[in-house]
Length: 87
Image 1 (tube, rainbow, N blue to C red):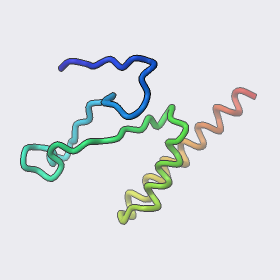
Image 2 (cartoon, rainbow, N blue to C red):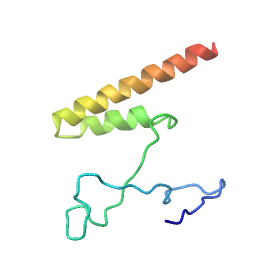
Image 3 (spheres, rainbow, N blue to C red):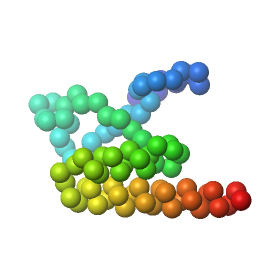
């Protein structure tokens, strides 16, 4: 598998990650064959908690909603700790 390097001055939406589904639904003829995915860095993307909360508010899956909210809180707490360390 070849890796495409992105120049540091390139911005915008581009193929930065290779995502592989683990549920078996991405094979030829399956529901998610050829789908595109958007990846968020939960440790470094400052918008991650907001994105997770927005998604949680718009999903019909209560388990996913609860998991996303819990993850957003975890990230916010971690970010608060980083801010406190700098003070």
